[in-house]
Image (cartoon, rainbow, N blue to C red):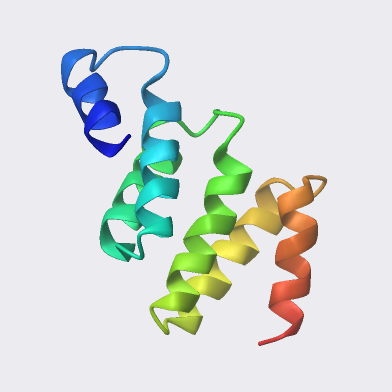
Length: 102
């Protein structure tokens, strides 16, 4: 799946599905424990598509990636950003629980 998503992004850089492609690449790399690649794809969604519906989930994933990288400060930053920006989302509810564990 990874080569297909990367090829799609390269072939259709202005596609409305680009944010989704980066999201799924982030997920796939996360599953493979390729955290740097996961993080960079998730960051594209947050930075280039801030109004995308996947942003709350992406912020949560960025927090999880940071935790796996033993970067508690970054994880807290992402979780706090999620709670502040999307307080009513399911991801924010999970982030609040994560924040209590720090």
